[in-house]
Length: 283
Image (spheres, rainbow, N blue to C red):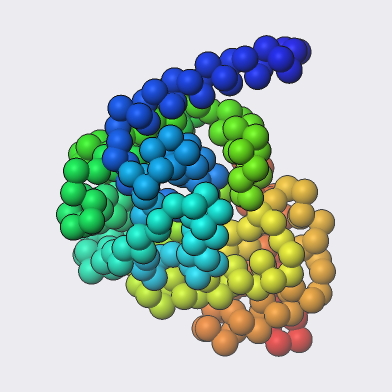
């Protein structure tokens, strides 16, 4: 096991490299999701170049209200100006079709809108992609490359543990927050994405958040919804309070097949669905 001081020195080398990279990129527009990766980038950029670094959050039906509040919260914590940019990916037929390249069209709309924004002329658009993000054919990354978006964390070798370590050092409020991708990421490939299905996902995940789950997904496909929670929270799947509320919300929204995955989110195992609705008095 490596000594903590060696780890710290290694991180300090990466921090110096990140600072150098950010200084050469300014002025900077950070695509802020509210997650720890983009928050750390915003923190470092603002610390180095002040008001020449701004945060930009794409606002649409695919962003939950809670995630928008989180982006607002972290931008305020950092002291950065936040531009809430209305995006129109739902007007793109290829995005709505959801054939597997949805993220390309979403990110293309976001980054393109940032590049055209009158307050961001001359700014370098950067994102929170890091060194451990898979380098394969990821639609969102293809959009970033196509539009010249820079990924400083990846450029200087920051991995996820580096990001969390530095975020903790900087006292960022979300340093240990789990990833929460956009609402559309819960919609099964081949199921059309529209504002209604995104509202369904937001309503389902609001129930899970309200009952104290930390890691959660509500995966939808037509009239089916599958709940996944973190491996250390699977034992809570039998609790009647959240199950009954979830079943009520699902039934009211027209979902007939409502289940939870006992394998747990991120387990890598085949899903083991167990019905929620059938065991609820409201099912």
